[in-house]
Amino acid sequence: MIARSLMCFALLLPGVVSAEDGSGSCAASTTSEPSASVVSVPDYQSDDTSEEARSTAFERDYQAYQDELVRNLTASSDPRDWALAATGFHFGPDANSAEHLKQLQRAVNAAPDDVLVLWMAVNGSRDQSDGKLSTSALEKLKTADADNGAVWLETLSIAAHKHDHAGASAALKRLSATSRFDNHFVEMSDAIITAYHRYPMSDSLYAEMPDEMKSVSKDAMPLIYATTITSAFALPAFQSLTNACRTDGKGRNADRAGDCQMIGRMMVANSDTLIGTAIGSAVLRMSRTFDDDDIAAARDTSWVRMQYATMVGNAAPSADLLAAQIAFHQDWLESNSETQAMRKGIERAGISGHPPKDWVDSGSRFTSEVMAADENYFADHPIDY
Image 1 (cartoon, helix red, strand yellow):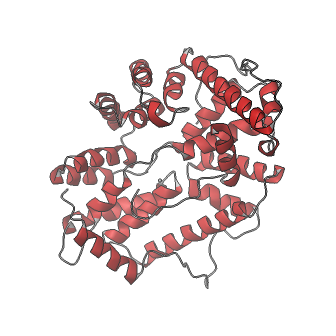
Image 2 (cartoon, rainbow, N blue to C red):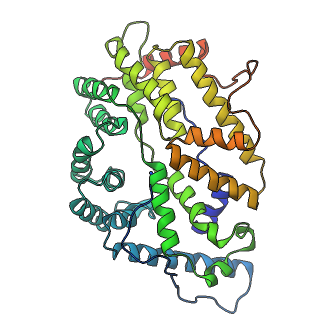
Image 3 (cartoon, rainbow, N blue to C red):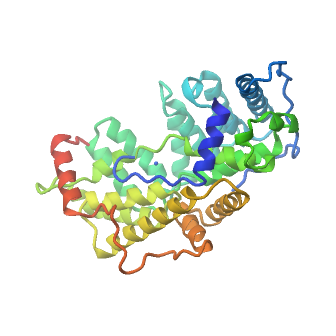
């Protein structure tokens, strides 16, 4: 039920609305390939017209469409297409197959300075047994995307995995000197949208879709699927950052406070995703380096998140909801900030982009209870990096 699940999830979640607060959750690609080339699939339909049979036939035809799309991208002359084919449409046990890793290596060899290719290689090979591809791509990113804190989070995660305290401190120092935190989520999403536009599903495949999945037009499918696919990507190892910055009454990690404060404030101000913004606030809280302005910034983000979630959660699938999703995607592309795209979305709907003075953030994490829980966690889970 892959196709149905993707569609239902996307209709319920036009944007990535989730926010995790302590533990960890992109420009269109250029191409020399022809534009829109309809991908045809075999006709598997049988004479059985039962709902279950039709649903099974659609699932099979949809998978055939996806498989042919991936083959077309793999046969392209553009290294971004090769990397996308290896990472953008695969989940589960085969996501890091030897063939996909070979494709990623091919893309990196052909485009060693393409930041998006390098990030796809890092994201698509983290679980590789020897780590060679991920490590080599990360080394290239240290030059090609050096001012991006996400690069140095990867370095921090490696140090944490090795229980290397000095290495973790060095990674925090380097991360604190960056000006933005960018996982290239929206750029990746836009690359997937572009691929679907270049190789759209056929009219016959769209006609097979169950009626409840036809609440949006065929033309809207690329955005729907890209939103859902990128929402399912594995998140960076944010917990290595929050753990490295945790402190307590005994002064543990106090020597990192300055770096953690700079990192937290940078992430709050300049993260591409809502989760990155939330993690920035978590870093400030766990390192005890926040002030009233930081609490106010977190309150402002909470307002935007809650209002946006309520707005889309209460909306039935419709042309207006689709238009709002398209606008959200464009705003995210232009601002490279999911939080700012949400703010524009609620303002477009007539909701203030900032909370009224008397609004109480019921989900605030800057409370004595939460901070006591932070210290208890540190006491129960000693961090050795």
